[in-house]
Amino acid sequence: MSLFTAALHPNVGLGFLVLGASLHDILTRLKAEPQRFPKLDLTYSQTDPVSEPIILAIPANGLRLRFDGPEQRLRLIEVIDFTKNRITYQEKDIAKPANPQGVVGSPRLGGDAATGPAFKNIYHRLFGPTYAGEYIPPAEAGNANAVGTYILSYPGVAFSFPLPKSAYSPNKDVVSLLSSSASQTATSVAVFNGKSWAHARETLWDEILPSVKSAFLFNKSKEVVPDEISLVKIHGGGRIQLFKKWTTASMWINLGETTPQDLVAELGPPDAIYRKNDQRMYIHKTRTASHSRSRSNGGDYRRPDDLTDTDQSSAQTGSDDSEDEAVEDEFVGNVTGECFYNYFYLGFDILVSPPQPASRTPPSQATTLKGKDTPGSNPYKSSTADRLVATKMVLHANVPGSYPFNRHRRCRWEIEYLATDSPDSVVDSETPFDEIEERLREEWKSTYPSKEDAKKRQRGMVLNRGWGDSPGSSCEFLGGWEDSSGGVAAKKFDGSEDSTTTLYGFPGLVFEVLKNGFVSAVTVY
Image 1 (cartoon, helix red, strand yellow):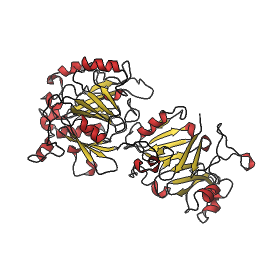
Image 2 (tube, one colour):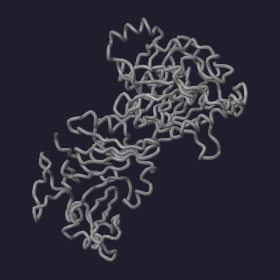
Image 3 (cartoon, rainbow, N blue to C red):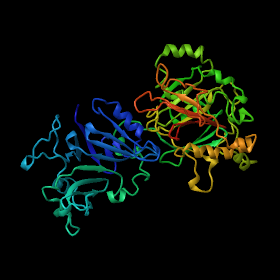
Image 4 (cartoon, rainbow, N blue to C red):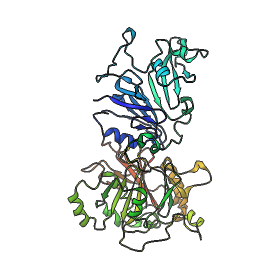
């Protein structure tokens, strides 16, 4: 394994590890070089994986990366073992480089090898003088020999030095404190965005980071970085608004009207195209409304195939796996030409097929918009029945521990027609499904035959994406095996990933829910 070498850029990143980059981008890059990065350890909260920070440790390279939960963006880069990498600043080594065996080149006095940046090298040669740092006392308050941590901070970068409690005094300057032999070598380096570590840690997880496209690291390369979609607002009635990150621009997708040409013009070409030809769920298209619990009109809630068609796109990496099969399926099982446009780096898939009626307008929105122009509506509607258009959109949450983790970047969404004047009442991708379901039942209560029916929890359809010849290749229906809450206990099929999820449908929406109660994906139709 070659030694990891990278240039440190305060406020920006470390080599190709750029602050603000998504977890999906970083993991994809690291996994593409298994010889260079042989081990990746991901730590996350199992009870709240979409809100709590995510930690990615790279032990073989002495690195640790911290991401926020909601956006999954890189917030903090830490170098914790200098024998396993070579870090430079302005083409100068910040620590004595290790040889390929991971041993530091020259020992210090007394035979101890230098394992980190020397204080004198940092303060005198590389970064220069700075303001007094912050001392964090040891946890063992009663032990006079216990060692605390002194953080020497510069804009965008900070160094941690071990400092005995007995040696610290607020009256001493930084040079006097860190000149002793026991404290003159840093144990770790942190790269962040902010004028100092004391200032940055207060807003570390929710600060709006600069665009990764503005980083000079990208300006010097030929790498094309697509515009990111920061938020998807679901307006109901098949209208979807996409906001582009770091800009005020947005675009509209009107299901049943937006063409593939419109998608490519606004979003760029898809990362892959998946031909939709799996017919194993076709039997459920013939279900009548009487099979659905607490529904007076099944058509109000979903077309029969909507629950069975949530994530065929994310199972494949593209349409070029077998060109012969694709051509045959085009004429045999997929005569309409429908397919998924996979936007892995944007976090969603779009089904392109012949036009279908969009879902009904939510009751509250129908009242508000009565007699007014509908926002985002297209005044120039095509009447060609055989023209392919966008008919469904699958938004992926990229929840750690879920079966499809890291196939897509995390896509954040909000249900706009459930918004109220209170900012705390937003229903979004971080909201537990129990709360989402309650709000949606209240919104659509007028479509239920009675108030009692509106209060009942609907029966879910259980899927297992771990079954089949190729994992995740199709939706597996376990109808009749549900318990009273719509869930089912299942064995884990692939390490720590749980491949069993449950689908719940509402007008225009299908939610794929994990066992911890969070939404793994939502299909808009």
